[in-house]
Length: 318
Image (cartoon, helix red, strand yellow):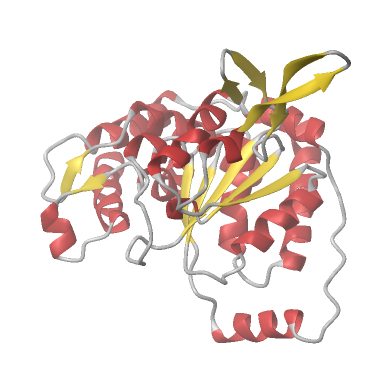
């Protein structure tokens, strides 16, 4: 218990330090922290210029993690992401040597990922799921902790390629980055136009982050909460006027991991129903595929998820 409280306090300090370099977006910071503590990847969706890149860079500074940025463009090739074998001449003979790509870092920012072709997008699949990169016949292990933070522009914008469901499923969370309020915008302008940028301190290392993940993985989940969590995922496969395809089994795994992480951040040693409900939106919004009726009526994934949660709440509190 004492160990959990100590680590919880350190994570809260890291969260506050990240907030020094990011005006507003407190909820976004918290959601990205949940993904970091759960050992997953996060997809940030929002208009350009909302501070998504600065957020990732600041996280790298606070946690002392190596950071690489990949700017996804239509002409980007898979080898530009993973790396490639290059020929090297040594004395009287030549040999091939692997040249690592930018994916070999603790934090990888895949900027505007949906502007690249599907072939290049898929170059990240193995790295995101297995934490390895295979080039030719050889696999290369990525350093831990490893995390992909991808940004994408809304699919309504020109020049975008929608991410396939298989790749979306690799992201633990899909986080919607909203436009700041007037006061937050005032702070952003003041921070970037004329004021001295704040000095961001390094408060934690990668090894300590891995230790915290192991501690979180041991947080128990009561049978009733586990049943509720599983039933929520199963509900996405039941007949619904707006759902075309339900969530995959990875959704249940994501709910378990991130619910534990939220309980940890709240200073508790057990997972509650409210923890599951809180993380259900970013876990399910990119895994539930809506049908044409939902699109034509302007029904969003979050609206459908809220309907599922409310339906299950009646069963809990009846």
